[in-house]
Length: 554
Image 1 (tube, rainbow, N blue to C red):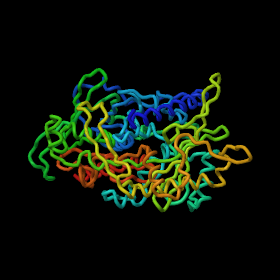
Image 2: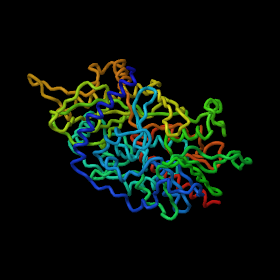
Image 3: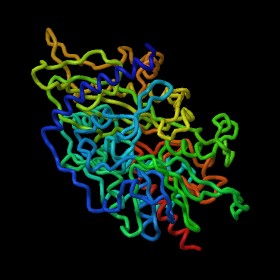
Image 4: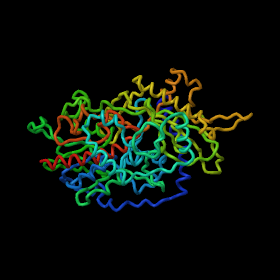
């Protein structure tokens, strides 16, 4: 069996074991999840005309696409196209306790989460539902660090940035209530010197902090889809189960920007297989917000990319743009999972330690063991519901510096592209991982963690690990580096593929194509700190405001 298949199967086994336990919790507290009133303008793509015209067409109703659509609809007619369905009729998507179920209950074409495996064999997931990955993630909310704004390639108006964050936060961000595990992690981080304690804050700050959550106190999820509440109903239409196959491009006389190719619309297909053409009006735009996998994939399928590569697929070349699909990154995650001696609450990421050395330390409980392969689990008798309490401590590195690439696996847009992240190919990333995993060792040795050890014979205590434990000799750089390579997994913060300065300019307009813009994480060459969802939602609002201002100038 290949290492990739071995890792994938072990990952799946652990998820399924914990899924049964999480399901027992979820079933104990059923909740009604009625669609909100603002969803009146959301319609199945089968109900749309075969051709229609709009001022703005946004491809991807995800983390950035929803706030972008809501903002542009204040003054213009907007079509938002989402390949998945709505989250509100899916209890597992809408529930804190359904997080695991959503990630594991996947199929090829219409589950809210679409799984994929990188060429390194690391399992991963992408959102396929209104709200995108903000509807399937762990809910942690934190603004970007200063380094992101300094190095992202955009000329940010920081006043508008802050206003855009606040616009998001008023609707969907909450202060989490710490319980046993998250409180212990906070205490352990402070004990090992991850100072200062910054309390509850949405800002990115070195030290230990309690971040925001998009789960409310009742455990109900809020995602970027909720930001459609701000939309002007008369100006927006949202088509779900609308699979965009390509951007329609036309040759034209050179414009003021020097382009002789223009986007004029998109072709999308509904669930019945019927094709629809959505076209833009004069001075309108097509905006790709399909994410770091979907956007470069659509660019390539539309004939925008490296000429020689497109020719190998028989795709007509509309524009030779060499770096489409290049500069793809994923923040590697490493860590350990332990079985505690006592029952443990469900908790996703709430407390974060940010070190000066570039490590982000986080934790979760009774959700998913962020390590593989599986060494042992402790299961109750079959007569009772299967429940495995598992707590995890993990680290994610700053950056990363290691760079990968994305290529097509098929000309069928529904098939995931092939992606290689090249984890730890840059020594700087590996060094940061070694430093971060050593911090995990310090956490385990802290007084705050003693209650999570099993008492053994003659009064000794030890942790019971699920998966690979930390090496005993944590002072050895080679041993720790080997641990990082063997246990690498994802924290779902991949980005890039259409980065600023290579594929788009500082206004996120595609180089060489008029009326085509990209507003999503595929434009990022660095990760915006601990979790990108806050900054992606801010970006959608921010770019919407900037585009409205552009139109007012003409």
